[in-house]
Length: 239
Image (cartoon, rainbow, N blue to C red; front, side, top):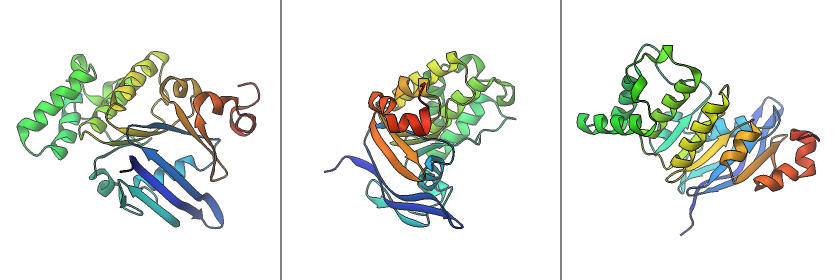
């Protein structure tokens, strides 16, 4: 049996006469961590948004664990066991850290005692105990990001889709987030859209480079970094 858990075939998305995504074939294996990179307008975010249900493809197909999910809304994709973190925060500033995580856990664990237990597990795993009763709106950016990862983790996802998780983080925060992602990757396949190359080096073994709506290169990190075509279109000759 194939261990491919996510696959796209001929995936395209047009905005008027512009092809933001052009006939993309892609596959991801179980417990694989793949970073998507590319210059602005390359198509990586459009690809991510089609996977998560934020955008409906103009053409092509998406399969998750063999089931076609093309055009499904976000909530239906999440119900398959897919954890999604977009650039738009999905947290509630007026609630505490614990309340935010408990609300997410209660969606996946209908019995109250199960939701409570999962909330405790996530708080312990992310070392959020000292701030668990703080209002989310009063937290630093890195702490908020960790809480958002907690929301993703409450459903024990087999696939995690993350859009720029390191954006705006301090070097210390990045180290902590790298550790969390590696832990998640023990049980879940992951796709991460990211710009920070140092952060990518710390978490990824394989990269997909988008350019002009298509996949330009797929290879391991060091080969991608040394690829002259990638350096020209994205990294720059001095990278």
